[in-house]
Structures are given as C-alpha cells and as structure tokens.
Image (cartoon, rainbow, N blue to C red; front, side, top):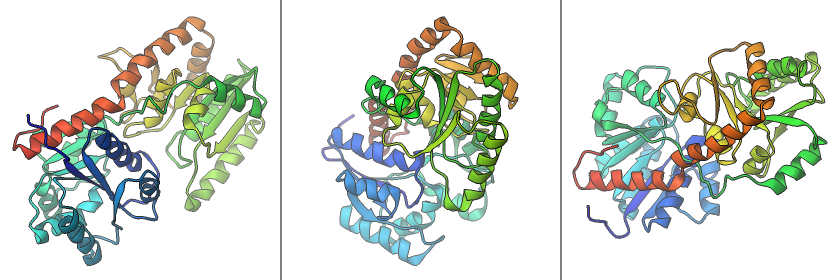
Amino acid sequence: MGIRSKLRIAQVLASRGEGGRELAPLLLASGLHRKKAQASIWADPDSFLGQKAAQEGLLTQAFRFRGYCHPRGIGEIRRALEREQPDVIHLHHTQDLWAVVPALALSGWRGPLVLSKHVASAIKKKDFFHNRLYRRVDLMLSCSEFVRQNVLETCSVPPEKVLTAFMPVDTNEFRFEAGIRKKLRSSWGWDRNEVIGMVSRITPRKGLELFLKSAAKLLTQRPQTRFVVVGKGLPKENWYSEMLMTLRRSLGLEDKFIFQGYVPSVSGFLSSMDLVVHMAEAESFGMAVTEAAACQRPVIVRRGGGLAEILEDGPGKTQGGLVLDTDDPQEWAASMERVLGSKALLAKFGRETRKIASRFSLEPWVDRHLQWYHQLLDGKRPTP
C-alpha cells in the first residue's frame, strides 16, 4: 500500500461534552501528526475539545451544532471543505451527520467519510432520513464489541462496514507515579490506609450509590479502608450530587469517602489507589479502566456494556482484576476484601495490567486508523 505524503484528515465533532468521545479526536489528531499526516480538528471553539485543540496547536475549524440540518452549520462545513480539501473526514458523533452529509453533497466532495460510535444508542435509527445519512458513511468504528452489536441492531449499516476500534490509552501519560501517590495520600491524611478509587462523571447510572453502599459494607471487615471518587457533575444534575451527599451522611462515611472533583493528574490519582473500581450499569467502553491498568492498578468492574471486554482475555478468562455481574453491595464488598486481603492476587493483577495496557496502547490504534484511511482511499474494503 503506497503511503501518501501529508495525508489530510479532518476530525469533526461539534459536541460540548468532556468525556471519552471528546478525547478521541485529540488523541487521534496528535498521533496522526507524529505519523507525518496533517490532522485538523473541526469543533466548537468554546467547547472542551475546541479549547484543548487550540492549546495543543492543532489546526482547527469552527463548527457548532445548531440543530439538525441547520443552514449555518452546513455552510461552515462547506466552506471548510473548500478551504482545507481534506482527503478523509472522520466524525465522532452521529448528530454531526445532519450538517456534514448535506455539506458534502452541496460541495461535491466525494472522499471517504468515517464515523466513530463512542456511545450505544437506546433508539433505532432505521427511518428514511437516517438511512440516507448512513448510506454516505464508508466506515463505522465502534469503541467496543458491545457498541458494534448495538450499531448493527439500531442502524441500517451493512456488517462489513462496521469495525471495532477500542479506545486507546496513552501510556506516556498514564503510568505509575510513586511521587504523586505519596503526596496525594498524605494530603488526605491516609498514608497508612488502603484506598479504593473510581473515576466517573457525577451522574446517574454510573454506580455511585452502589459504591457508597459497598464501602459501608467493606468497612465492617476492613475499617482501615478509605474511598475516593474523582469527577465532575453537570450543573443541571446538582440534585444528584446532593442525593449522594445525603446517602454518604446516612451511611456514616463523611470522613471516609471523598468526592474529590477535579484533579490535575488523573494518572497520579490512579497511582494513589490500591484498587480501582468501575460500577456503571452499562458503560459503552470505560477509558478509566484502561488508564488504571496503565498505572498498574488492579480493577474490579461491573459486567454490562463494554467494561468486561477490557479485562476479558478469552471465554471465561479475565486478567488484571475481577468482573462482577451484580448490584449487591455485599458481593462487591466481599470481592474488594478478597483482592485487598491477598498479596498474591494483588501481585498477579499488577503483572497482568501491563498486558492490558499493551492491548489498548495508543500507537497501534493510530496505525490502524491510518491503515483504514488508506484502504478507503485506495477503494478497498477496510479490514480489522
């Protein structure tokens, strides 16, 4: 396969969120630059993604979501196409198809269109209009096998057009950091305690009530254990944060369970943990789990969505931690006690997390995307 010089890739996402979907185009654009491709980011300049792209010096084009089939958004994309003339356009949100596909038709641009699916859909999108949009997509990339199956069930897309591209972890950024571990644990006054942590947005269905209730159960067996959650909530969901504070108070956990909010180094936070948990009901993937593995932390996750795929290494075999299929706080407490109480199990999981980090490392992920782009440009069907 011949390598084109200065391949031009437009990463497009109008979302104003701050999750894995918004990190994906940043990671990909940065990786493509290292591979000598020209990658631009088309985003809302005031969004998390737009601001990060500007900070990192990535070429950007203003693109805001103003509603479905909004003429101004379509015009922004059309002008950007004429100015930048990308070889490939890569979208990271289905809703952006409503502006991008009409703009492509109006401009006459006929290059490959790639769409990454970072979140499973709860509704079927097989109506006439969605069918027209998806017909223009040349390749759909799902962040997990769970999301791939969801795409096939909810969208009118041929199976051969849907591949899995697990979200990566940057092992240069995420690694065990002993210095930050010592500093953070000291700041909490927990130098001699066992600490269990979770990285999560403060929003319903992430399993935060389950974490609180499991913590209360575990403390009856291991009173020296402490607990921390890192992550922010949305202003419109302040009611949920207040509910969690009420539950924490009722369980007597106010001095043992911290909601830390923002931390400058997630890698340092994860390094500070003795065990990391993720209790979401149905996460599409779970970047925090691969990041914990890169920091050599054992992990316990809840089966549902794509979380279990990270730890599963073949049928019935897990590595780096445990997979639980329960919302019973007593069972979670027993599993956390089992891991923390066994030096041999902690050492085994610690060794296995390196394999997990290798499976999901950033550079091979970028290389696979380059392979897919070139296959599309050469008129070939993309292969896993």
